[in-house]
Image (cartoon, rainbow, N blue to C red; front, side):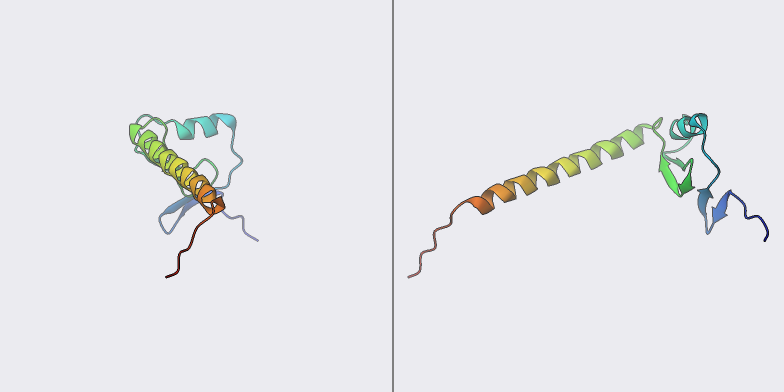
Length: 89
């Protein structure tokens, strides 16, 4: 069998299955000269570039949404435990 390439693009989506080094992992998440999304150091697709301020905005929005979801679930659990009085005329 022919050896398949370890990295490249398929339908415009990058992939890289080469064994990652620590230096490559760190440098892929911090690229000051690139856009918000950069190629993943291992796997398929893109990841956030933490050197770009837009990535931090995305992380803050996602964190806020998760916090609100967890808070609303805990409040819903408290409401379910309360007794409800039903009046029938």
